[in-house]
Image (cartoon, rainbow, N blue to C red; front, top):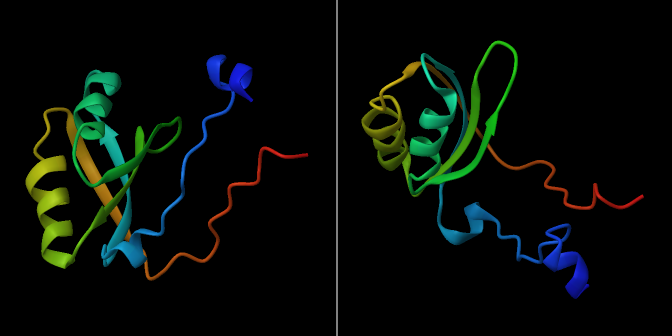
Length: 109
């Protein structure tokens, strides 16, 4: 196990449920970017409340999962912080009702 960790093949972490920790709002954002996608991803990834960020190919440049304690905090994160980052040209928000499937066993065969 130690060798796998040293080679960064395995990372042992605890998985939490944001809803049970008091985060009432979760959303997936689909972002279009003008300019350097890595610079925009770095800026967004540094924000508190951003829990997952993927640089993608296709209709959107970035897929960003966010959490917030309530609707006002979610709006502030998206409208006040993410949309104001230079290079963010479009943001489409998909709010979650709940988590249906949260699986971490995909690496086993």
